[in-house]
Length: 35
Image 1 (spheres, rainbow, N blue to C red):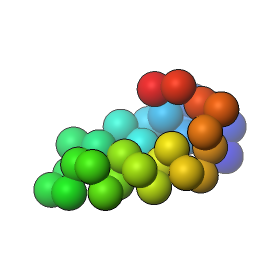
Image 2 (spheres, rainbow, N blue to C red):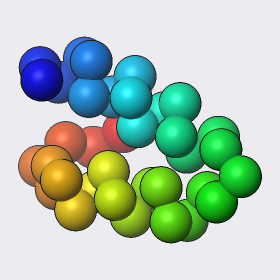
Image 3 (cartoon, one colour):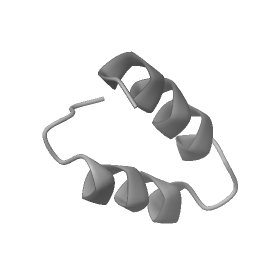
Image 4 (tube, rainbow, N blue to C red):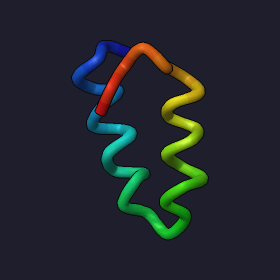
């Protein structure tokens, strides 16, 4: 997954019901990517 698609995936999840949970998953998968 390239950075742009990864950011879109993370942003979609961040605005889900469990904000912190999804955000942490995204950060854990690619800590070098800053959203």
